[in-house]
Every structure is written in C-alpha cells, then in structure tokens.
Amino acid sequence: MHRIGDAPKVRRALVSAAVILSALFLLLPLVAIFAQAFSAGADVFWRNITQPDTLSAIGLTLFITVLTIPVNLVFGVALAWLVTRFRFPGRRLLQTLIDIPFAVSPVVAGLVYLLLYGRNGWIGGWLDTHDIQLMFAWPGILMVTIFVTCPFVARELIPLMQAQGSRDEEAAVTLGASGWTLFRRVTLPNIRWALLYGVILTNARAVGEFGAVSVVSGAIRGQTNTLPLHVELLYQDYNTVGAFASASLLALIALLTLATKAGLEWRAARREA
Amino acid sequence: MITLAQMTGSTPKRVLPGFGLSLGISLTFVSLVLLLPMTSLVGQLSGLSLAEYWAIITEGRVVASYVVTVGAAAVAALVNAAFGLLMAWVLVRYEFPGKRLLDALMDLPFALPTAVAGITLATLYSSNGWMGQLLAPTGLQVAYTWVGIALAMAFTSIPFVVRTVQPILEDMPVQVDEAALTLGASDGTAFRRVILPHLWPALVTGTGLAFVRSLGEFGAIIFIAGNTPYETEITSLMIFVKLQEYDYVGASAIASVVLATSLVLLLAINLWQGRFIKRLHGGKG
Image (cartoon, rainbow over all chains, first blue to last red; front, side, top):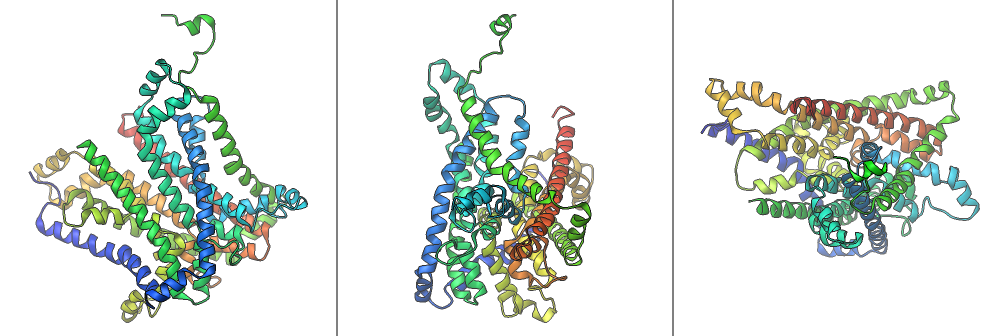
C-alpha cells in the first residue's frame, strides 16, 4: 500500500530536516545549560549550588511549590467534579474562566495582584494599616504562583472525567457508598494518572514562574528571591557560570517532567494495545 | 411515563453527592484568585479620562514596543507553523530510531522555565556563543536585535502547532491517501489538495495560540532582546519599566491593552475552532 510521502527520498529528506532542526533549536540549548554550569568544573558547580543565597532561593521555591500544589489540587478536583458530574447554568462560563491565566501575560498577572494588595491598593491600604505585608514578601509570590498554575490540574481532569462518564459512580451511590468512599474507591483510581500529570505540570510551572513573580517579589536576596529570580540576578551580575548552575537545577526538573509525561503516555499506549 | 419528580413538582434530586461542596470551592476560588484581582485594573483606570488614557497608550516609545512585539510574534508564529507541520508529519507518518525521544523533546519549551530559556538563548547567540560564532560570517546578528526576540518567542511556543496538528493527522484514515493517489495525483499535489485542507483548521488554531503566547512572553525575551528604547523593547517590558518608576496608572493602561488584545484573539480562535468542529459533525457539534 502506498501513502503520501512514502518515497524513500522524501522520507529521508523530511526526517533529516526534522532531526537537524530539533537538534539545533531544542537539544542544543539543553546541552548548553549543563555545559555552561559545569564549564568551570564540578567543584565550582558544587560551590555555586551550595552558596547561602542559592540555598535560600531553592528553599523559598520549594516552600512556594509545596503550598501551591495542594491548593490547586483541591480546586482542580472540585472544579472537574462540578463541571463533569452536574449540569447547571453558568457551567460553560466557569470552564472558560479557568483559562484566564493562560490568556494573561505573566507580567499583567503580577501587576493586578500588586494593584490589589500593594500599599496603594484597595485591600493593600487596609492591610498596611494593620501591618500586614503581602507584596514584596513570600505571600505575594505564593498568590501569583497559585494564579498562574491553577488551570493545570482541572485541564487534565475535565476531558478524562467527561469521557469516562459517571456510570461507575452512580452505581456506587446506589450501592450505598458515602461521598468520601465514592471518591476514594471509585473516582480516584480512574483519574490518578491524569491527576499525577496535572500535579507534575503545576510543579514545573510553579518552580519556574518568572514574569509574575518578578513583579511582586522585590527580589530581596536571601528573602524573596526564588530560584528563577536568582538565576536572573546572577546573570545580570555577569556571574554566568553561577547563573547556569542554578538554571541547571531548573532544567533537571524540566527533564523529569518530560520523562514522567513520556512514561505515562507509554503506559496508556500499552494498556490500549 | 410520569416521574416522581414531575408528580411532586420538585426537580429530581442529583444522584451524585458533592454538588454544594464542589460549587462552593470552585466559586470561592474563581472569585478570589481570578476575578477579584482583575477588578483592580478597572479601578486603577477609572480615574483616567479617555484623553489621558489615549495619551499613555499611544506614546511613541510604547507604540514602538507594539510594533516590535507584534512583528516578532508574527514571524515566530509563521516559523512555528512550518516547523510544527514538519514535526507533526514526521512524528506521525514515519518510523525511525530516536522518534520517541524527538517526540518528548517537543514539550521542552513548556517544561523549561522561561528565564532559563532566556539566558541560554542569549548565551548561545551572543557574539562569542556557539551559535553566535557560527552565524558571525553570515553577518546575521541575533542577540540584542528583533531577530533574537522572534527566536525567543518561537522557542517558547514550539509545542502549540505540533501538538494541535499531530492528533488530527493521526486520526486521518489511510483511505484518504489511497483515494488521492489512485486518482493519479502526485505526492505534492495530493498533500496540497487533500491533506493540507484537512489539517488547515488545526494549523490555524495552533499558529494562533503560538502568536498569542508570543505576545505575552516576557522571561525568555528580556535577556536576548537588548531592551533598547524604540528598537528592541517588548510591550511586557514597558509595563515593567512603568512599575519600576512607580507609575502604576501607566502600567495599568498598557496592561489593559495587552489583556484586551489577548482576550479578543483567544475568543476569535475559540470561535474559529467551534465553527470548524460544527462543520465536521454536520452541524450538530
């Protein structure tokens, strides 16, 4: 059987073009990150990573991520349950609204939070008189991180839960299962891989967010400096090797994200076969 | 048959539990996290007269940033349309060693933090970087020019076209190829006349999404852009500059332009996609 583009010459040309372009535009940058990070040797790399400023940036990034994930997990599951299991007016609108963070430029996202909670903002003014500071402090970073990452879990769950339907769950209710038992024993086993991937995506974005965080953080060394902001700071200080050492940690998380995705897809394909 | 609900005049009880709880969590979250902050932009702008607003958003340096941003984003989106089509075709139609790795690599720009992409591209394409040295004899300067801006935009939006075209191509039945070729079309004609029209809606959607994303991109660009006023400043950076001058009103005005543009474009893409899906399902979708 003959298909379009089957001729060996065409095939060879297209595959070579695809591989060469991908190597140049995607693989080369990835290699460059690690090459730069280790360009002064493993000792220097280690010293860069274990500097107090770097360690505190890693700590803050982990802290923000660890708080962001459960918030968006609960929201994502609740929203997916709501829009796939019930029909009610405004359902479509709600589904459109959660895409706002994808449409908004990160800098604009940071700005609207700064306007609201900053010293001159509507809520910020009141907070200021009560000595509560959210902006240019970790709570501000946490808030914008939750904002930019909130669609990921819901976006992974909704199509899957829609496709699966609610027959299993209705059967369980008929058999007398309570709400929590129903979720834990029937729903969760069906959605756990999509849930995991949603969390992985949330994690990748939370760890790496730059634009929104740089507006609200103030980037105070050792206090409100997340890892991506730390990378910027070192780079602007002409400490390229140090910047890439920190960047390589973020690249490593990106690689783990890609590996998880490939693994989950491979698993799904094997189950279908 | 008359149901119990109709007899008693009440709506049927929802079978599954958790409506109230999930509605409560979702509405609280959407209001507090998504909608409330957006209102602050309106509040900030309400103090401006229309003339003042117009003056801010049409100031020379800001207009120059629109031209740079839109121009570079258009180039980046078109480059990605071609590259994405090629990648989707190769990944769906051919088998070759390393294919799975290549497929996984396509998602790298979404997984890699934008600031990391930014410093890496800036270093690679600077005059003493690997790519910069390679390109030096050709006279093409990428770093600190609009070419660098377009490159950074193209990099961060690579997955959009590939991942929208790929599933459509996968679902295309073999018979389409056979029919076209049996009727005597050459490969090139068959691709242009049969395959491309079928992929067109997905290709336009993917390219549109890549364009919107490029308009809003910040982290990957500022390191390679050079950020020279009137020449290589992007609009997101203008918002940032205004903020550093504590000009919150100016920042809000420019942000409202960025926000409105991306919302209108996304709405247009959704409508286009909706129309296409309707056509596919014979007007029922």
